[in-house]
Length: 132
Image 1 (cartoon, rainbow, N blue to C red):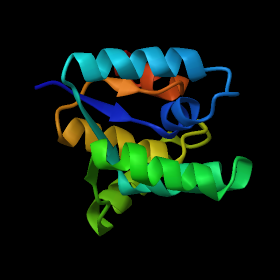
Image 2: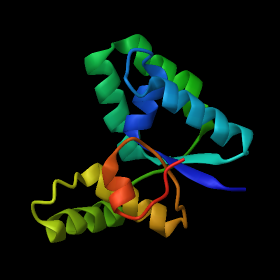
Image 3: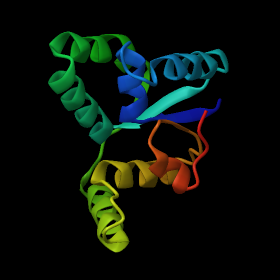
Image 4: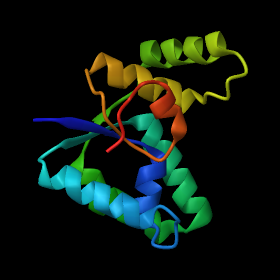
């Protein structure tokens, strides 16, 4: 079974009909589901997505994410080691604009052998991951 990493940008676009990437997100999601791909994410992406949805859309969107999309996700819970490795990557990159959430995502994807990212964040493609 193939696996794809779900990033905040795709989760947000999938759940928010007014987002500019909503239709491409819905189409990519359907392709991934039709292919039987498992969706993987990290606890940091969950936190970032909950915060973004709550701030921009409200609690109903947070609930929809948790109740509708959450059960479809295989979550990697970030521990101290992964957090520290992510922070090291951010610090090594200097002023490249890499967030800790993205750095941890890249490391988790590499650790788990995932090469496809369901995202609209250019950093994943720049990092060498395929986009659906």
